[in-house]
Length: 447
Image 1 (cartoon, one colour):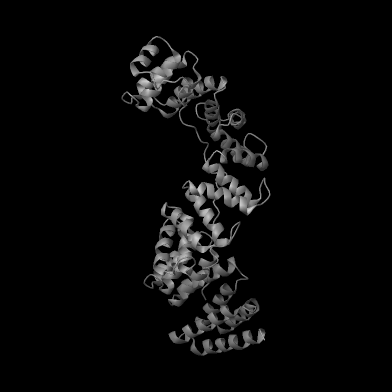
Image 2 (cartoon, one colour; image 1 turned 45 degrees about the horizontal axis):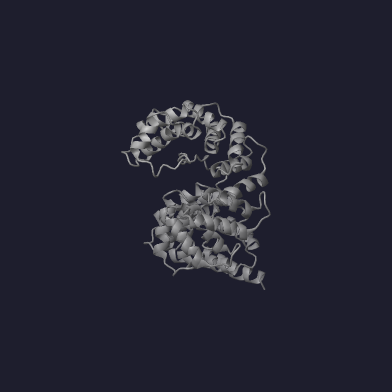
């Protein structure tokens, strides 16, 4: 007997809390000195005369290729002249160029040194970047407490990356006592500035009720903000909310729309779940061929539910040519990842092919994994039946009857199993007797 699970494929909520690396901000903004009305020749003259602001802004021109050819080495030289005069933004940008190996050999230790100089002057971007260096142990010994120290200084000045990174430290208890309430506070500050990762993580906290009261509407709000910025993980989470009716009325069409966007960008979970919608005809016209196409994309990346569902399409010949060998291959891949339903279907598919010895091995595994599962128990009876051990088969069938409860669908499918055995000439008399047993005993049980 096959375990069916079309409607029960779990939609995965994307958890990014412990996965994202600290973020570094971009180069510092130009000095507040207005240089728009100053010609490049005047700027070069002032820089040559030792004006630190002019040196810094000339460095920006060379870095960005504005009014001059882009030249990182020239940018580095002019930043260095300003930095040596104590210009904090120039010191930050020297640190970034060492960090990235732009115009100079990459040197994390030098990057740390220059970030430190600018951070000591209160530059928020430098403080944030210094925190990253401490957290990652680049150019300096790793020290999460120092990372938290510098992130906080920057975050309190409104630096969005630092707010997000400080939230991560509190979320994971790195360098600070784990405190998801505090994590939510800092995520919210960053989220309100448009930080996508903070929006996703804050949405996750609201969804799970960690650090904040569980609130699906708030979770939906922050997932939507991130999804609207094109983040495929947020789009997948948003789709799952529409699919399940969490924080918003259930809407399969909206679910399909957001899964489609995420799936087209390569999100594996979205590809698997979009396949389910096409398989069931939820929010989209039922289309087994499209379901197979999306399952295939996710299955190729190792997504177990997609492997399982694609296996079912191959087993039944829906959207793809019927191919038991392909179904077995896919079930085996999913089963190897701990998918019990795939393990059950693997044994059943092998049995249907008449590969009884191989089927017995897989059916035994399935029952060991899920001894209270009806299908696993019935299949155990089936394999003994077709191999001629009618007495043992009957004992497993009797246990299956107890597990059946009032599930008439499972009972009907079981009767169809015996029809298959009789058609194939497998223990015809015993199969007829077993069919009669189920038809009578199970029906009587539900009267």
